[in-house]
Structure formats: C-alpha cells, structure tokens
Image 1 (cartoon, helix red, strand yellow):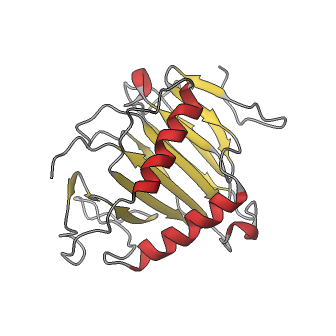
Image 2 (cartoon, helix red, strand yellow):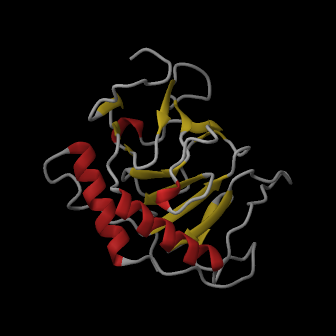
Length: 222
C-alpha cells in the first residue's frame, strides 16, 4: 500500500498491514455520544484525567484516564500510585462487549468471541497534542488492540514492528472510525503526528479535540 492520507471516497474496510484493519464509520453517532458521556465520568475520577509524566521527566501532551487497570510508564497497576493512589474505575461489561464486536467487525466470522479486554486507555488530544511512534508492549497478552476515534480527525501513522522509521502508512482517522491491530501487526509502531482542528462534529458531545479509546487485554491476574 502506498503511503499518504486516504481521501474520499472512503473504503468500507481496509487492511493496512497483516492483522491491522481500518473500518471507517463503525460507531454510530448515538454510540459516540454514549462513549463521550462515559469518558467524561471516568475523567472525573476516582483517578482523574491527567498528563502522564514520563521517567525522563517529560510530560505527554495528551491527557489520559484509565479504566480497569491503571497504566503508568511502563506497567499496569490496580491503583494509580503516580496520581492519587486510588483504585481506577472498574472495566464495565458493556465495554468488553463493544470490544468483541469491534474485533469481529475487523476480522470477520467469530473472531471476537474469545476477546476479553480488561482495560481501556482513554487519550484526549487538544488541537496541539500529538503522540510519537511507539509500541503497545506493556501487556502480557498478544490479543489485538481495539482503537476507537471520536471528535476531530487526526493523521494516524501506522508503521512496522522493527523500528520508528519507514515503511509506515499515514491515514486519516475520522470520528466513528475503528482501527484494530493484532497478529503480525500487534507490536507495530504507531502514533498520531497531528490532530486536524475544526473537523469534529459537535453532535458527538465534544466541542473540540479528539477522544481515542483503546481496549486491550493485559494478560494480568487480579
């Protein structure tokens, strides 16, 4: 696949790389509003949304809140020891059902039947926020990562499993889009070079910015 942003008309489903599937417009507007409302509740606590401080002292430009397990660089815990020491909000059953439906939508058949996500990382991007190329490798499970986009569009860069350099593919993720990566692409580098201000629909419940919800299996007990 050649690099560059996808442009209209948007395909119904695209396999960007083996195991990495983009499904445009998967979330209905009603479901997007429901997710925005749920994320607002989680953002209030018990562990509030915050900018994560990295071990080198840097501060991430996105704001993050977690459900089920708390992520801090580079491990999962049940309590947010780097914020306020409180347990994170429980991972709701309905969010797991949504994750199973997402994996089935991406891979077909009954692919999502055995998918059991137990954590969600919710990142909020304002107009200036970005995410550098990284791997999601703190989980002990190789199950797929489910990524849901709401609000303003972004440039999403999906790379290879060897490093941050080329080859990679840039695509535009729009509100309601689903992206699932697993199998050979589970540990591919990926990131968000920029958000595209002014592209969101206020009907989602977001006045601005981009909400990204990623569902994962941690593979951890307890």
